[in-house]
Image 1 (cartoon, one colour):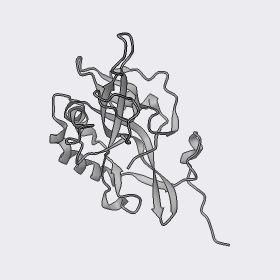
Image 2 (cartoon, rainbow, N blue to C red; image 1 turned 120 degrees about the horizontal axis):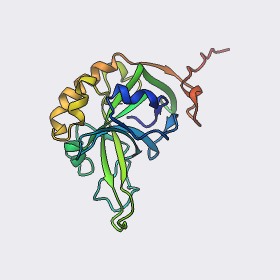
Image 3 (cartoon, rainbow, N blue to C red; image 1 turned 180 degrees about the horizontal axis):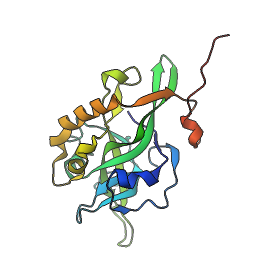
Length: 229
């Protein structure tokens, strides 16, 4: 799964993900971004095709939902079933995005002990995601729509099952344009996407970190080695 991400270098994202319009000028870099907070996503406009980098609420809410706060978590969606689930089906078909990130945290669970690790590459990576626009059913004409999004996950590659059974889907840059193209049904890209993600995970590195509390660059520092006295 993927429940905490790092978006600390937003200035690098537009060029790397071929963004034409940057709507993230006021975004504050973060080393501990949590679900329901504002995350940056790249998406192609459904009407004009313009690729934008924009803030979105990290937890997808389908347009038909009556409330912004759902009774179940939607910050992650399983790529294997997203095309079948009512919450994600429409987005998987035509409303897809990418979360540009510097890395993400995952917790290794051994018994009752949970140890945080920071997973990252040499440069920002893109996580495949879905988005949806939501507005309250009783909204007035002047009230704005809310952009919401989720990160797709897959079975963890063999090299990372020691850390967690699930992993975020890392988008192969060669698939970027097709993944963001709303005229293509996303379910037709699932096999290619997961295969590419499995391969890309081999290029990622990780290290243990300290408690992931607060926010700041020190959160991604490697935890000091502990020796028994």
